[in-house]
Length: 335
Image (tube, rainbow, N blue to C red; front, side, top):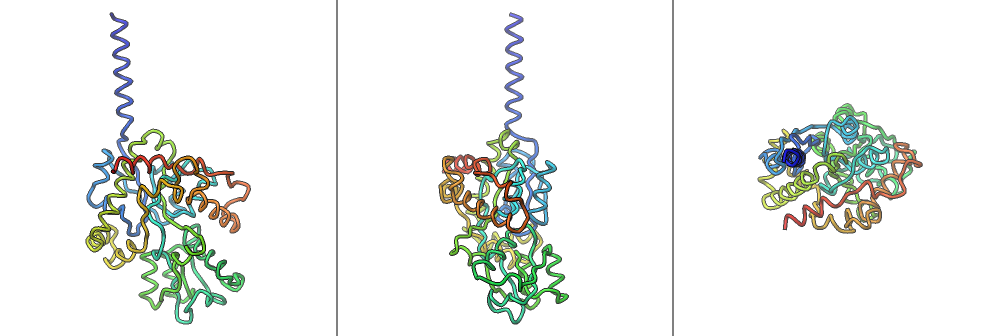
């Protein structure tokens, strides 16, 4: 009898530990300071409720910063660009892509001063870009597909805030950057020359993605799935009333409402169901040949060409870099 009681107590203790482990006390979500639908969940606290955990919001300036946070185990989930995410994966950070938060369309764009009316006018000019970013990738792709002579363009790596300062000093003639910095360049005498959406016809898929620590995803799969469901809920909320959403997001990030509206509208949002297909993350059987798998191949090739990563480090496939089970589970449970 005593032995049976001990076994029951041990089983009960194990069950308690398993149950408590199913929900983390805190989830650390990293985000840029720009406008994004996820800020709707920050504003109303709905993410905390959905995850049944305290959400710690960690702000960063660029995707490179997000990689640093992941490397130091300081965050669990982050929303940032496909280029730095690819670099982190190739460098063997223990992270994986779990979803696409938005496809970059007009959110990132090339802003030029007087005398730059189209992309070909960049030759002979000084152009700023944020290093290790989707903007850098888009700029380099635009130079390549339009067959510009890269040697005739002075490319200057600048953080977004540094780019605005350089623009106002007259140190650069154009800048490829995201909102709200793109609007700052426009309000200081600039105009739109080219957008990342213009590259889609040439087969470039450039996007922001949700990336998670693998250890966190393995320990708390239901939390990751719930996070993605909230993302879709907030996309739906934005689409139902874009103006109201822009006002909420603008207040949350401290930006003008017009900037928030421009940014939110400058992204395209594939649904959870769409993302679990071959066109996006795949259904779990064709990961490397999925749309995101092919984008990783193209992006890693670009990064190797710029010296950001080593070609020999690029993996043979992306099976461990993309995990679509969470997006598929979220889509199924959201129906």
